[in-house]
Image 1 (cartoon, helix red, strand yellow):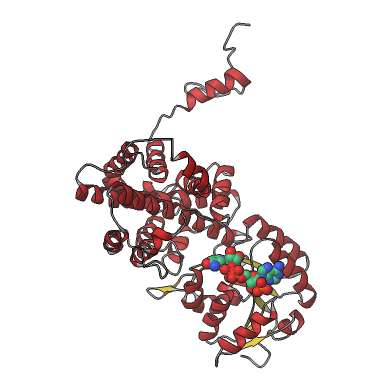
Image 2: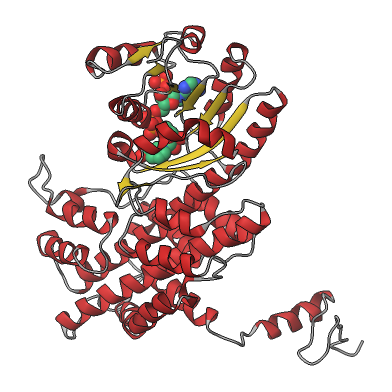
Length: 472
Ligand code: NDP
């Protein structure tokens, strides 16, 4: 700590905040902390801080007084109204030039709004995504900061020390102005939804289709994690399949209610993709399937009388396993492709000036969607910064196409067995639509013009046209 105060402050000693404070302190930074519920602060100071240079403020005035000027402080409180509530209480104690970094999962439009309000008070603001969960916050997350370059530079030594490192490179960089950081984090989460849905579909195909138990699934996903599917989500999936339930001795995964919860970031990604007409079907379907998982009772009732084919796969099991692995890898490529194509469009629409190579670089470590594949994604954007879609990268396009037949086979099998695999199906249709020079949208245009005089464009002449489709 300098003799004028702590290097950085953090408000919100929840799961993420507590761990991120310890992380920053372990890198030699003096940290001031504050939490709304004072008992939590006391418990943290008494049991977790040890010899680290961490000081606590038990009210905001005391907390702010602990910070070196100009102050820099991070908010890690629940997203939404709590962020506005904390800002309202905090502002009277701050001075022009002080910097607030909102590191929660705030919606990017909230970040833009807060940016303006604080700028009018001569306060500096950054929106920063953080990914990696509890363990990442503690030992090195991926950080996605947006705001001004000058403010990033002010806190860069702290952020770069605390972030995960891959081959000596920190998983943090300045991403762009205003809400650029929170936007990138939102899309990160959208991709996370897509990947989790695809993995869940492969689990269903192998469980219900092949009748494999968690004990049999664990080594399969573990092997996949040592091959091209190498990623955090596959790694934890393999581990999940090995875990026994303390209460029953059964495999824990089989004892967990099949209702997936969500906090909204996947849905936000789909919404904004629709607003920007970017098209992220694998992510959209992932949100829909979490919603459908929610009506468990309705599904249980309908399962009694809505019948379908037998889910038991009758063919070559080893061959099918290989096809599923390839289908999942193709799905993974297409999910990153959709997310990054959305970022490409958002960068133009919102004037973020995103460098997608840098985005891929900071996602390689620390975060939930880290994967070996991101090295290729990075290389793709390094070769061509304005790549409209990852599938158009010569290497990744080839990787996808060499697995396309297996993806098609797996989708066909899922249809035949009556097992829902909408993520894999949406991925395949996305690919088929993207590679179609001609789509049936001409008919949709004709229908729109027929019933609403919405006009259409022609293939052979410029301008807009309207046809009187029926005689009066
Ligand atoms: P927790 O639920 O563990 O902690 C929430 C924190 O917010 C607590 O310190 C709580 O204080 C504080 N808080 C809530 N409401 C208010 C309020 N009205 N005024 C003041 N403080 C308030 O949350 P997490 O640590 O999990 O998450 C924090 C942020 O990080 C969220 O935006 C979350 O989306 C994001 N995030 C979470 C990840 C995770 O894996 N958990 C990963 C990446 C981002 P009190 O103790 O007084 O209740």
